[in-house]
Amino acid sequence: MEEFVRRSHSLGNNIHHLQWCTKKRYHMFRNPMFREVCKDAIHLVARRHGIEILELAVMEEHIHAVVQLPPWMSQSKAIQLLKGGSSYEIFRMIPNFRLRYPKGNLWSKGNFKDSVGRQTTEAVQKYVREQQLSLEKFTGNCGL
Image (cartoon, rainbow, N blue to C red):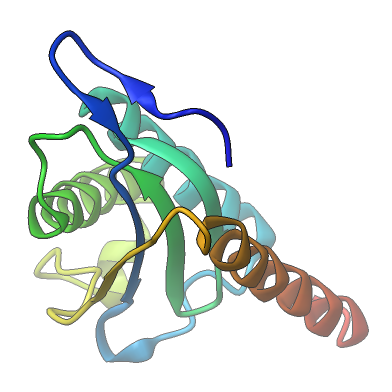
């Protein structure tokens, strides 16, 4: 892992593994174009709120993200911002998603959050990267 993040009066890392699912686990991101739109939306929202995405994997029905949060931001606030903002942006970019989710609730209520220690950041990033590779390998074999 690289150096600590330096701020005006603090030094350290605030790295977390976040995961959330589509409502009812619908496979909304089976299409590679939709996966790219989702990635773009998450990156846009992250930049807007000062969240640095270290790794991001968009699976067919869930998201894995390894993020560096600003020191004042909690995991819960980060999930709230990423889920809410990305949902808004995805519905804006792909209006047909409203056919499946007419009330505008793309993501399920649940989520997974875990802080990542300095020694395990690379291991978690590798896990997230391998999730994406396994999806690409699987979808490559079935012609999607």
